Image (cartoon, rainbow, N blue to C red; front, side):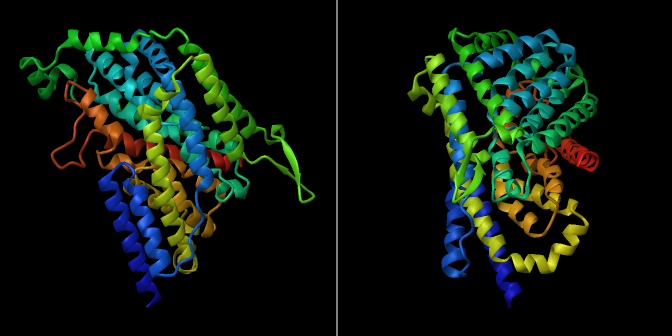
Length: 448
């Protein structure tokens, strides 16, 4: 009887996740909260832990990124990247993905890739390189940059004190494992993708679009020129300010002794990393607005701020629902699957992968499933190595970055197949996931 009730709860949780994902925007958060209501008031489960730290870190980091966008800093960075990529057109399949990965690693959000994808597509097309090759890896690399970024919501979630932060895992551990693992995975995927598909001139869809006049190189070049112009001369100062914030987060995360200490109830306590990130990034937002002479009203109307607030609401509901369900039934999971998952930890990475497909959020996936992984006794460093598995939402081609990449590739080589799931991003997505997790395990094996 107890098993039937738990399975019913699971079915309700999965159904609400599916409905929330289909609704989009803040739908995940709203329907997640419906799930909390059902689990607490109908099934009598104790409410799980509120993901307050993660939500506040998202607010602080997104505020700084939104201020950077308002000051023209993001456009300035895009211009620098475009100039670099144009100097190396023959290697666009490697440099394009590495550029989007680096941008997302620094900024903590995959939304920075929207500005780079059309540039990558245009350079590949002008170089007669099949745009599908760099575009697919670049799109996946943008998500991979989040798992390892010192200022991403997903990293904030994993190092929060009630998750791996409470198990002795620090920011430097995440970066030491995930950054090299991601870098190697991107290079491997780029090498493989460089040999995928017909050459551009031989692609039937590209030939059709050329014949029908659907591709206008002159108009697209004009658009690219407009993207690379930077009317705000103070934009570079806002970039420097933002990078200062990232540097301080990495510094204090890597060297805990530099953080302030306080005596609380007769016991010395060091400032926790979540509070440290919140203080630094909100202060940096003020500095960006000051040196960039940006309009604060413009910051809150940009797409970066809107996307960040959507993420916060989604995590509020969906993560609370997941925590309530898994912690409320933790003894059941321990007795039924603890031995299997502990013996074969990679099975938990499969669960992370499929949950991320439903949640469309790395941070929400971490908040939903990592408490279960900790409760099952999976070693903390193994959970760090599995971190890239939360990027599985490429599997269904309806994530905004994938949709954007398809639209930006005017040659039609980046596409969704006849059967939907046979789309351009699958190969690069699975390669980066397998390689990054494998390299991560090698790193923790030899260094920890």
